[in-house]
Image (cartoon, rainbow, N blue to C red; front, side, top):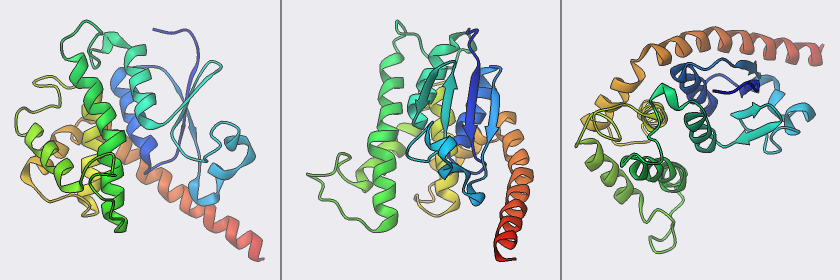
Length: 219
């Protein structure tokens, strides 16, 4: 546990949605600083002082700032070990946990982005080898058990489940049963459904606010 204040800098329907779900799953108290991407709030001087890249999520823990989704997820999981979603350093599953978390950021997401934009990187140059190999490796792993680390859900599943749901929605991943079943299994959890429902409300509010801003500037 911690006695330092936790604040999640967040915008709906973004990578920060996954971290919001994770924090709810971990049962931690936190403040949610909601930013309107459509109104340009991620590029405001105040937020750029927190993350110069103008991206969400960003986590503040007292005076500490953590950016990058996977770094935040690892940080939070270790911060709240009693939630049981992070293998301890002495747990035999810890190695696989670290591997699949880093694989997501270092191989899977770059491979998917390159594929989506048609950027062909030679296999001997790409840090992930090839998109097809990455996808095949993930599919083979998910065929083995219901969760990334076996029969128990972990922080890794919150990350992977959210990502696979989004990628399948936009046809950026093969429509394989193993991917669809896994994404549905993870994102059907109440934590996801509650965030999805609230984001519909926030999205409508942000769209209206951005439209009003444009109208004010035009008028």
